[in-house]
Each structure stands twice: as C-alpha cells, then as structure tokens.
Length: 301
Image 1 (cartoon, rainbow, N blue to C red):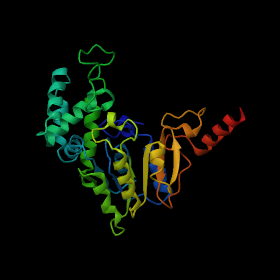
Image 2: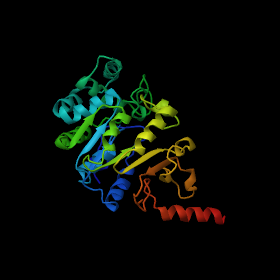
Image 3: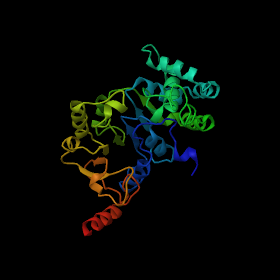
Image 4: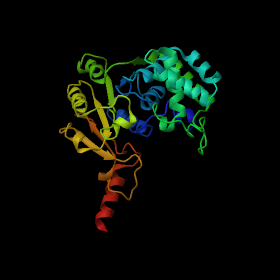
C-alpha cells in the first residue's frame, strides 16, 4: 500500500482515525450506504472522509470544522491547490519560518491561504500535530527528531493535489457542529451518512482549541437524536458519555488493542443509530470473535 493510499490526509491530528476508515467502509457496504453523501461535522484531519471519497464509497464528502485555521487549510487545499502547493515547495522548514507561521496562526486578522498554510506548517512541525504545541526537536533543535521530521514535501504535495482533483465532490464549511448537523434532521435531504467524532471528554482541553464542556457534549447528543439519516458517534470511553446515548447500540475498543486485555478496558466507544448492522471487524482492526475469545481466556485463568 502506497503512502498516498495509507495516509490520504496531509494533516496530522490528535486522536487520528486512520484505522477507522476500513471499519466505516465495511459498515457502509453491509448497510447499503455506499454512494451516499458522507458528512463529518468535526473533520480535523478528515482521513476517513478522504479515504471514502477517493475509493468511491462516498458520492460527496462534507468537511466541516469550527477551527478557523483548520477550515482555512481545507478551503485552501480544495480551492487554491496550486498556490498552497507552491508555498509548501518553496518555504524553508526552519525555526525562523516556524516563528513566523506561529505568529500568523495566532493573529486574529489572519485568514485564507495565509492562515491555511500557517496551520498546515505548524501541524506538520509540532509534536503530535497540535497547533498550539511545541516544535519537534524543541526550540533549540537538540532533540532526536528535528523540525522537518514529519515534513516530506513531495508526499504532502501529492496528497494535496489529489484533494484538488476531487474538489467538485468536497464541500468545506466552518460551522458550529450543532448547527451544521441540523440540516440532516430533514429526511428530504439527499441520502447521507454522518460520522461524528467530537472532542474527547477527558483531556480535550489539552488537545483541541475548540474543546467541549459537559453541556456541549449533551447538546450534540440532543442534535444527534434528531438526525433523519444514519450515523455513528465515537468518543473516549467515559460513563458521562455513555449516559448521553442510553438507547444506542454501542461497542468498546482500543485503538492500541492487545488481545490479552479485556475489551471493556478499551479507550474508545462508538454509538450507532437504530437499525445499523455492526460489522464483525472492530474499528481497531480486531474482530469481535477475537475479543470474545480473549475474554473467555481471561475468565478461564
């Protein structure tokens, strides 16, 4: 598998959902959802959306993110592809550039291509892709890895150009998620499938600029309850979240799953709208039968 196929998104993102893409593909096939519009109210790195679109599982991809910088990047990648790629190819990956781009990203006046590139540059040069985080290698660049460790120009430009070639099938928006999903509360809308991956309940403040408090999580759960199209919602597994989706079918899993661990200790949880058939393969690539076998072995000890 090529890097372009394995990593369709040019962005690195906290809690990246690359492994979930295959699970979603199987879910769409088994539930007759292939060919619908695919909607991500919290796009972030949009790895799932791009994978589904590029491989023909989705007719259109709706990429929404409230963060101005993330939205500016996606808007630039889709609508100003050549200009964005030129910036990536010609801008030196140095600490001087890092300071310049951080200043742009922090400026309330920044917008458009300038903000989109600044967001991209910091995402690729900061630890874990966190825009407000520290640079890889540290400010003095004495770490094992340097600022350009995740900045492969050729590969990144290829990914962005592929996004540009699909621009007619990508809809980018910058709305609050609650407002954004309301348009799919109408069953008359074009057939769609929604995947919501809200900010983590725990530690969200340290990972996302637009983190949620308990009231925000409850508000999005209320919006999901009124959707007229099939949906899935993923979270970090917390009892406070489970209480918000009391009637939804749910599965628990760990993205770094070990067959020697009880599945209940998994760090992620996913909820499903009524009527959706859950695939045998879990989002972490482990089959449900493997989880059951591991549980039985643990109980037998």
